[in-house]
View 1 (cartoon, rainbow, N blue to C red):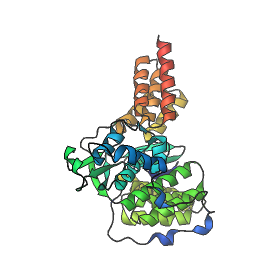
View 2 (view 1 turned 135 degrees about the vertical axis):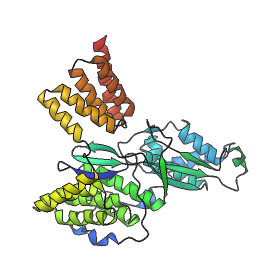
View 3 (view 1 turned 30 degrees about the vertical axis):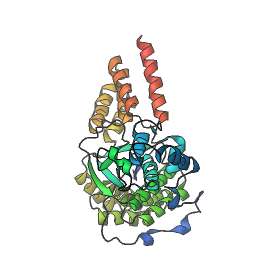
View 4 (view 1 turned 180 degrees about the horizontal axis):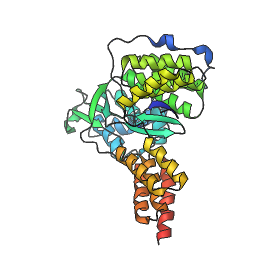
Length: 379
């Protein structure tokens, strides 16, 4: 993919296996190229309880007749806190509690913060359901997913009410949860995910200095979290430093030889360096691993829409829907193609699916408005 950089992002949340021995990332950093971040970056703030959280813990969780663990489970999964899934930004525990919303990484962090304060066992899990891509402008994101498992407190007699020794809480919206393969991950990786998400969000907003320091801190917290190396390379590309970017991408590939994000970004970097033959070789390796790039058929569909060939557009968007049936934007554009072909009911169906799978309030409101307009036109 030469038309945009690729970043690993925990919009749902991205996990990565830990290697036993990892080369220090220090040689990849170039602090002199970047101004200080706009806000302090402190990993200790991620799980810190705000005063409202402390009051909620004392008044609602610590005194619950079912026991603290079941009280927390009910609060976050049974609607007592009225949490909303919102992927627009990654929040720390206090921010997620105040907003009563967040992506699944934010909500896992908030839940873990309460659990640790209550003395409960906490286990983080990376759950795999295949590649799920999203985009913002010309930056493409590979999304992963995490959830959290809570254990009992042996000294709490009220845990007699608990149905199991371990309980997993999952905030994934609109997906079939059964059969997800999960792998335990440690808290430093969770912290790295948080920092990497924040870095990616800063990239989207054009805040390169912030993105650099956040990616740097992610790598420092968990040197084997390769998504942060990839983000650092994209930051260097945006800052006009392709040689530094190349080193970051090659470090990823040394440890994950079939990392498609790193291969795609390396090809883009080598092209910018004028090393066409090497860029072509990287493209061939990417094609060997990945038959079609993310959003390949989507871009074909957009081109067909612009050319007025709505049947071809519908076919291309339908291919993307088959590849990623949970991604809202594919359903939206397939609905537009159906509308241009005069298939009102098919268009309504696709817009309804776009609405169902939307992950931000902005997208939800946009799709709801278009669906209402289409319904009124039908009547």
